[in-house]
Image 1 (cartoon, rainbow, N blue to C red):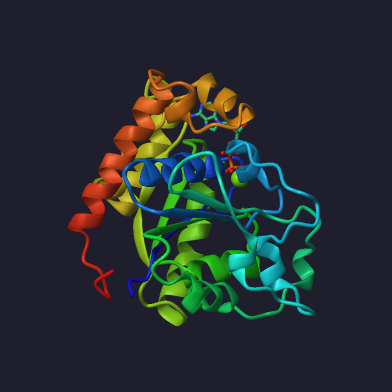
Image 2 (cartoon, rainbow, N blue to C red):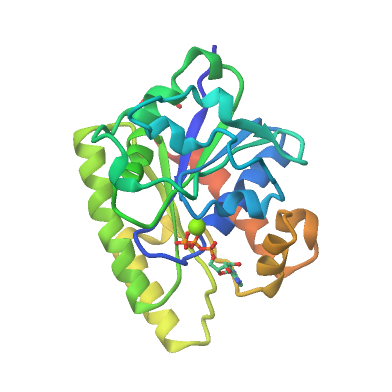
Length: 263
Ligand SMILES: Nc1ncnc2c1ncn2[C@@H]1O[C@H](COP(=O)(O)OP(=O)(O)OP(=O)(O)O)[C@@H](O)[C@H]1O
Ligand SMILES: [Mg+2]
């Protein structure tokens, strides 16, 4: 039975559009007919907000996997969303990161459970900006990483920090991990500072790794608050146009990239 491909959306810097990107790309995967599971590993639990999912406080979450006392199968935490082919595992706002066992393979083992095999084509992981065992678990479980970044000097540093963690995981615990690309968010090429940071990232990672760019669009923030992916909330917005283009670029890059295990 086929195994899902796993994409982690990550950056060491907070507020760089990770969750907006995770929700909207997961919605694109599902709309293109691929069965998709979005897993929220960030205790802010924003994916549920962005997809309009409200659950009882005691509903199982992704963080229950990391409970030392009573770890739980991931399947118990999966909920359907209002969108065909898109399921969600929410995060636990009360989870304390220092309680997580020091084991980078917890998520990978959970995603390899026989109960999940054949159920999904794609699993998208939204990750916390902190460098902790959850981020390492996400990178260890994933086949691909996508890094949204804002073209500010501090964000450039966040990308470099993430790149160091990425290569450490790729060398030590996950030889399958590939850098799918970087996605500039809230890019305005009229601003000199934005152009400069963008040029630095391009020279460091290569133009082919930049998957277009997401312009600033209040509709993206509004769609989040309305609990809908941008493709549903404002299909004619530039936010939707940009995410559609980023998704098309991502699909092209997936086809072009050599993959260690054929996934
Ligand atoms: N292209 C955009 N245009 C306008 N607003 C945006 C855009 N992308 C994201 N936002 C808004 O910026 C804020 C931060 O975005 P988001 O929550 O996706 O970032 P994040 O990297 O997940 O943050 P955190 O590190 O806190 O998890 C949100 O309020 C979101 O609605
Ligand atoms: Mg987030």
